[in-house]
Image 1 (cartoon, rainbow, N blue to C red):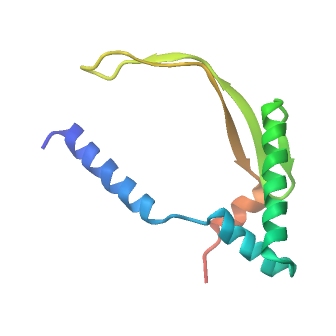
Image 2: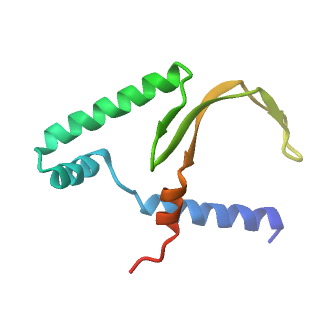
Length: 116
């Protein structure tokens, strides 16, 4: 097996593993937030929707959003590039906007703590 084939096999296996861990859906997040705040899940879902909408609007306007104790969302521009994998034709990637998230130091500490 060539090195490229082995990398491809490992990547496919990693993608399968990550797709099995679906994560936390918006509905589940709303349910947990509702339980924590003592409100109806529909109210929590409405608040989450408003938060996501405001965050999206700010990022589209080019505004950096800082949530103290959580992190910073920052809009970024990516320049157009042309990648050419060995033995393949060039693959253009157009210029586009994206968002970067930088976790706060307290969040990093929490993420790196040992779980009980």
